[in-house]
Amino acid sequence: MRTESKAVLVPQMASLPRATAKALEQVVETLLAALHADSGALWINHEGSLHTLVVRNLPFQNISALQQVVTISPQSAPTAVQSQGQRYVVACVGYPLLKVYVAVAAEQVRSAHRQLLPRFARLAQTLLQSNHAPIQMPGEDKSRHAYRVVVEGSLRRLGDLMQATGCVLLWFSSWNNLWHRFAVGNVPAWLYQQLWEMPSPGDGLDTWIERMQTRIQQRGYHCVAEELTIRDMQQGGLLLWRPQLRGRFTSEEVEWLRMTVHMIAASLDVLETQTGLLQRVYHDPLTGVFNRLYFDLAYRQILHNAQRHPRPVSLLLIDIDHFKRINDTYGHETGDIVLQIVGQALQQVRTGDVPARYGGDEFVVLLPDTDKGGARALAQRLQRTVCHMAENLGLPFRVTLSIGCATVANGDSNLLLLADQDMYEQKRVEKEDCGAISSLSSS
Image (cartoon, rainbow, N blue to C red; front, side):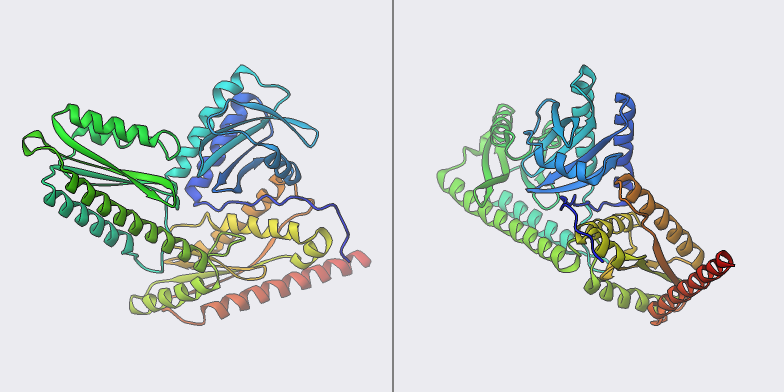
């Protein structure tokens, strides 16, 4: 029977590759040690959506309430915040598309907080920005490389027509919060270095582009600059230059350049839209792992490749123990948190593995080039990770998994069925063991 309880805000857990997740956990651990604190959290506001990354010794009710009351603007100094009867010191860095927050439990803002919190937040931001693994179909995805060839080819043709010796196009992607730099021709070393130290949109980008244009002109070139604006938001710019002996750029050349840049910006925007659509089509929105549709595609292709080039392929079939009881007792909001915990744990598998939500509380992990021993080791690690994450969030119950494991060596399409049979056998044995223990207790 479901018990009625006060509704709580659900912290959305972000899913990250294993290396990034572990690095961010180390950032928080080091921060807490440096500040002699035992409770803290790291989260982001990505395009208006809050995603919890790391939590240490904070119940999920507290972290949710804290996230709701924090309204710190980017680059602000650490500020004391009261939430759920506890005081926290919170700092934020970033820009409109990606704000990174770090928080520690403390009674007041001290000098150590002012010095360390912003530094650790910027370190976390750098780690997140280096994580740019795009959604890919099973197998190699050449679309991004092909698009780069097209863009750079367009810039090279543009430079030839305008007798330019160098051209740089800068595009800030809202998809992965990274700068994409396209350069053709002769790019001076000093300018190339500046391209990796540029600000983010909304943080003086227009001024930076004007300054770069002036510096190029001072080096003895005629230079023209053009903004890349999409939906009234400046997302980059273009710099094109040529020697002074070839004369200034005419008004006709500048107008033609403006139209060309506008078309390139529109094309880049279409690419991001398509990438976003793929993300929604092939990912489960709650847990962040792949969905059933993507898994079916990967399953067929990976097994087909294993038939052509014999190699082991393993599969883990995962079921959350007593999930219906969790929903009935604690509510579906808490059940969603459990699903997010499992999804976050599954994101820490190797690149090339395929973690997916198969349906309801069932998950699968497809493991190419993995034997039975490697699959069993991963299953044990996932058990420990999920249990540890649930404890860190302060859930009032243990979260355990039933995991079926199977391995085939020749691309046998019965792999999923074999894993299901293994899970069934494990549950049968556990049920018999529980029955035997109950009999001994009653006797």
